[in-house]
Length: 342
Figure 1: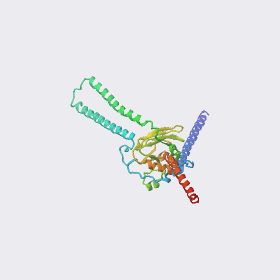
Figure 2 (figure 1 turned 90 degrees about the vertical axis):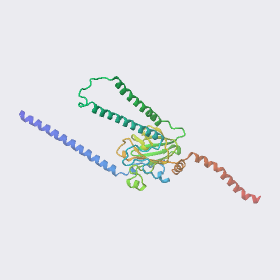
Figure 3 (figure 1 turned 45 degrees about the vertical axis):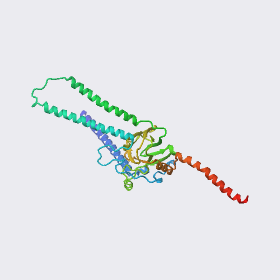
């Protein structure tokens, strides 16, 4: 009887383990199927349809102007590139100079250490030096290999701290404010200094990007248009999760955090099209919310703002100034028929 009871208990344990395994593998299979279905839906989704652009404040975007043609290799990654992108901002030039200097420092230190290894291997091997030295300390060498690395680190720290300070320099009062809002998964650009209109930016399909002559997965339907050669107060925030506004060729990166408004100075040296991407893991379509910044001369930027239904500070002052002349002309026209009657 004891044997039968033991066998019965063993059968129950085996049955329980089998049932648990079936439930576990069944749940994993269901989860894998759900994940596959979700991935298929994401891949089939139209990026332009993902954005909710029904707000009345959204400007017409690229419909009011002709987008600038990008320059090959400018403001975009290149195939088989081994260095950072060419820079088109003052911060970018400063950071790129420090980057090149650090590469040379690393190369010199690596060559020096390699030379020491070779010298030790050739001079202090068993065949060249059968009787090993009993020296255990050398004060001069110990001081040198402590002081020299400290001086090297100090020399690197000084320009690094200067670059860090320059990157977070406060924008001047007359800087043009532009606000970038990250959504899942597209960008919205609003212009509070120019009537507070908004432009919604979605990634173009490969066919649309090829038709425009732009790089795939970087081209967008509506770019963030900014003036070149003037300071810009670029503000970032997010509507759902954390995003990050990053444009490598401008050496610009600033997180967009829900409930917070971050800002940073942006200055673009010359007109052009500069591409970037969201660089904060923000969800399933994180890799499909690119950034395209189009820098225009100031007069063309003002024309673009007016085409979006926005306002330009000088335009409002010029319109009332012309009104008295029109009134005077109207008064003369009314007075002219009365003269013969008199």
